[in-house]
Amino acid sequence: LEFDATSSRWRLFGQQTASTNQIVNGLINGGMEVWQRGTSVSVNGSSNGYGPDRWAITTGANQVCTMSQASGLSNGSHYGCTVQRTAGQTGTSTLYFEQPFDLEEIIKWRGQTISISALIATGATWSPAGGTLTASIYCGTGSAAKRGAGAYTNETTPLSSALTIAAGTSAATYSATASSIIPVNTTQMSLVF
Image 1: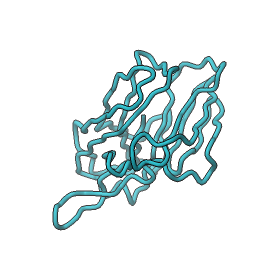
Image 2: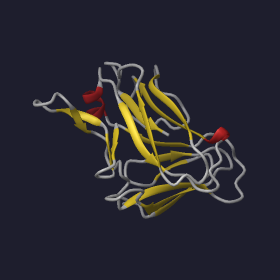
Image 3: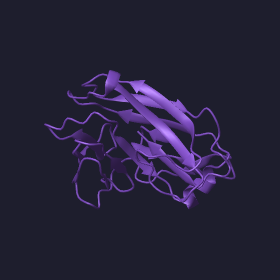
Image 4: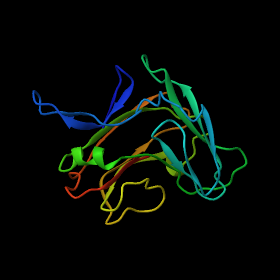
């Protein structure tokens, strides 16, 4: 998975090219440019919902959140996504912002090592414990689905990396590489922040 700063788009390597043996073009709407459900989506506490196409959020108790279309963070990026807990909400559990993958996409990555890179900004009220944002690739062996706050069948986590980022950071590049390959029997998979 890669964020291409030139085109301001996410790419999850998923199709092998004969000339370079590189796997390309897997993450759908990684630049968060497509918003068919509207440009602002509210999600109740202890619930989940979709905002930008293919992206979902899972909230905890007392964590009503809004996913809103925002200006892009770099040249060439038209939009991005702001995830914000509604004022007055007191929930402190982890929010899960993810892109789940279909089996057709997952098959391409089996046996591969995945890397991610993203351009991320925070607002003045960014307040997770220690200012930490975690990115993970979760894999399982059940039916393809969102992971949310639960766990996949026979779950593995080939990639889990934490980034400490300060409140009010205008834009920072975040990169990580999986410590192991995507298991060859994977049938469930999500990129989760």
